[in-house]
Length: 210
Image 1 (tube, one colour):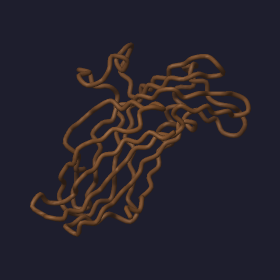
Image 2 (cartoon, one colour; image 1 turned 120 degrees about the horizontal axis):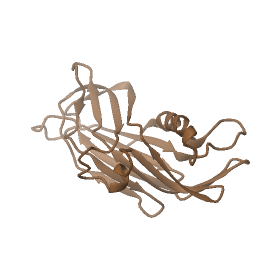
Image 3 (cartoon, one colour; image 1 turned 180 degrees about the vertical axis):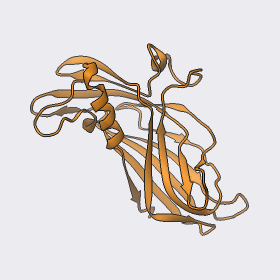
Image 4 (cartoon, rainbow, N blue to C red; image 1 turned 120 degrees about the vertical axis):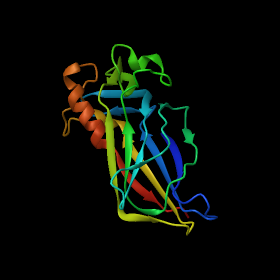
């Protein structure tokens, strides 16, 4: 089961009749599945994360170009397939990088459920079972994950579509490598290693729109 979050950004001047578009999706796999390392068994039941203000880096700018500020909660489970974000307009240009942000819950917590600020501000909440025992993993780290476009994206009024999918497999979040089993999400001593695995697990692929 894959859960996809898709947003479409229109990267062209408002007056153009056939603007180019960049579409980016976030795909989380292994929700609703059980993974067996041969040593440990872990089941992933429900994932909640905070989607922050993602950004695009344009070659001629000194600062990133961001979407209109929007922070929201993304829930993923076996019955929740996707969420959509609206179109946003950006200037023409050559874009070099896309940045995904998964921040800690905002202090005012106006759009996030109370679990994200119960006992501290967190960015990701994952519920499941580890060797048959229930767990709730709460990541206290804020993530900014950059992806370089290769080659750069030249955005104009050509009407070309650029589609990218950012993917992460939750099984990798608890990997120790080799045959050592999974990192136990119930042990606080494993939090740093799990958070590092989360940050390194995301990758991006361009999809042929045809």
